[in-house]
Amino acid sequence: MKKLLFILILFSFGSVFSQNVEITVFLKDYETGTPIEGASITVLSTNQGLVSNEEGVFKLVLEKPSKIEISHTSYKTLTVNSASLKLKENIIFLESSNKTLEEIIITKNHPQEILKKLVRNSTEKLSVPINLKIYIREFFKNNDKYTSFNDGLLNFYIQGSPKSIKSDILVEQNRFYGLTDDVVYEKVLGYNLNDLINNYYEFKYLEKVVEAYSKKKYEYEIKTFPGNEDYYVMNIRPVPGIEEYLPDYFIVYDYKKNMIMEINSSVLTERYEFKGVTDFLVIKGRVFTSVFSASYKFDGKNYYLSGSKEEIGFIATNKQKEEERIEVKNTFVVTNYSNKPVPYDKEDVYKDKSLFNRRNTILTNYWEFDSGLTPTDEEKKIIESLADKL
Image (cartoon, rainbow, N blue to C red; front, side):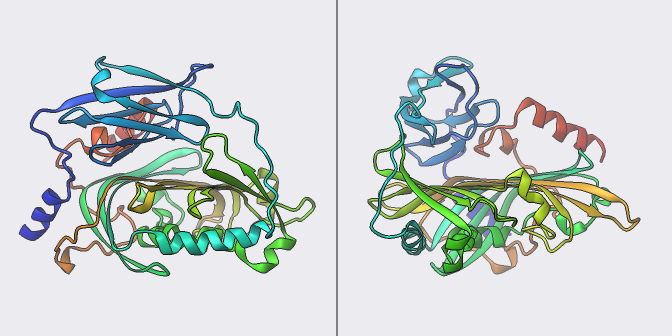
């Protein structure tokens, strides 16, 4: 355990400062004033990564001034100096990038062939081995009521080859609140952490649209990306009239470097009736929500996962043969990374698939500033109500 403590201190990426400056920012749309969720924030001096929450808020702690880059697929990228953020609550307005008209790109090769090349090249370029510091958070609902929650700061040591990823997980801090007895199946209490990393690093979520037969089921279209002249967008939609459980895809990629920067996938409501088994669990049930997104960063040297979000909702039958609505929402935020090898004992590697079995280890209020994803006021109320049930 002494070695593990050394690792955690070494691997904290400077999250504790001798002279801390706390910064709170509200991101808003320049024209409408509405909060901007899901913006990617990078502290350029340390590569610390954050994401704005549903209220458009992000919080961070800095030891010294730094430039902060704020980017979003729907807005123009903005860089600000932290020294200018002097108020208790700072408001930053972002200008929409959607004012520029998209143009359809005509290609010599079929877009699916371009996608195959993108997947192959992106897989090969992802930095491996790499240490990712990740904040993971999961909310669970049963019959429209929140029943459990877990989150934690984890270190993923990703190894292997680009086509065969392996990862060891070290847990720094974690929380679990809730009642597991209210869940239909125990294994819905969390996505498999190792499987998720493999899916993101091997681009398994795109397997359905790179196979040859997919041309008969999907329409592929490439357009310019208003937010960045080096990016294109590939829209992949099911062919009208096909009655199957097929997602829509929205893929942002750097066409000069042939690297995928963002993947969004969702299933339209009218297609839920065609699905008999959920995507992430082998459980029979009727799906009513299926959403996935993942984003990647390239800093000029390293290409790595920067965050993800998955949601699944389905109706299943419990042991009393009663139908129950199960919903799971999982979020990853990569708060930093390192290429330096870190020694650790294999006995300290976390073996379970999710955090719900692990005893709470709370050393600091890590969810406020170290998580990279500030909880909203509503989320705080949900977490507190679950904690009160213990």
